[in-house]
Image (cartoon, rainbow, N blue to C red; front, side):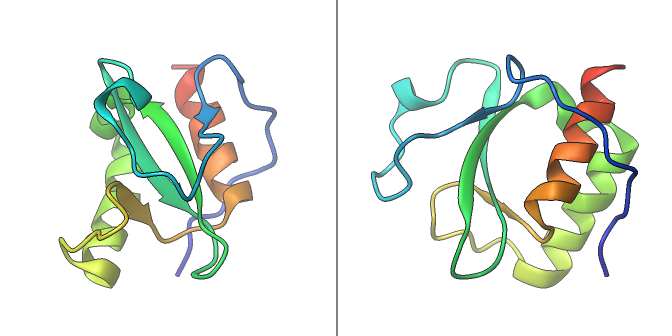
Length: 99
């Protein structure tokens, strides 16, 4: 089950995709006040860095509950894995950026 939102352009200054998926994340890779998340298909996950403030929003918390149900608390990639497509993730972060 996925969250569906209408297509909205997103702010590139808030949402930053990590350039290097294969590299292990380092503390300098994720700025203070942000968290790394992985989004996409199982074999095509992409890493993004988002503000921690997104975690407090009800729509994002629903996505976190879905992640807990699907993956539990085991995230071997070093960041939180979210069970949604990139398009849904972009739409959600665009909505949160406007709040």
